[in-house]
Length: 346
Image (cartoon, rainbow, N blue to C red):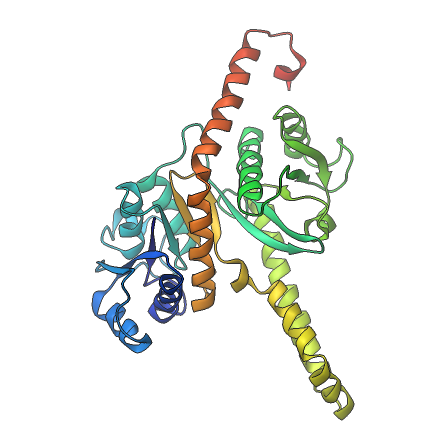
């Protein structure tokens, strides 16, 4: 198994990407580092020299964070993210990891690697810490305008990710809405509620915003507009609370002394909510693995992202998603022969 890593993407550039790849290689993962060869070699030398499990693949161009998402397809075919996607398509790598331009990574993965048969729109998922462990939220930005059958596909993909990567035997799937009752929400969520009841998944109904972090469900399904607002709001809230806590702990001599005593507990708390521990967000529905890390990802976050990519590939997730989507399409075809069916009316 080999993972292609975009060495040029992200705010921290090659130091973070190469550093994370170096850590992953030390743990036994084979890496294809893609990017500007002299820069990559410079970072490798700084870290201690070449590693046996790291291979450098040249890519002369870089997609900047402020460039249009279509850039790797139309203007920069030799960009590092485009070359990573080609390595996955050709079978030289089983997954790609990038902390670069999110839109460019999603468009390139969809157009170059291709989608799983039956999946109309890939979904960007994220793993969140909850009061009871971890949960999956999707979509968080790949699709801002979705139809009911798209969210049904998101639910299927989230189910398998929670089952195989988070080790949830029978993941509880919830639909994000403004109330638990079936009649609550928008036209879209009310329609999706009916659709999800027919999937055979462990669908528990509507969930509210508080359930996202409460741990009452393992998979939270929503469209990309809502999901993106949720995670960015949560990120900002977490940073604000951490800042306020540090400020209060330094306010008096007594609070500074208390902070020293509580340092182990604060450290454990920080690890539970640190995005670097969770790694990149998978783009589910692609013919292979595509993991998009936070733009501010450091070496630790990149190493965690590579670890998530390895878990994804080892579980053969994109084939399981393909088979379940095909099963649902067969159910639809059977229902088409029974126009009086209540299910097909929905």
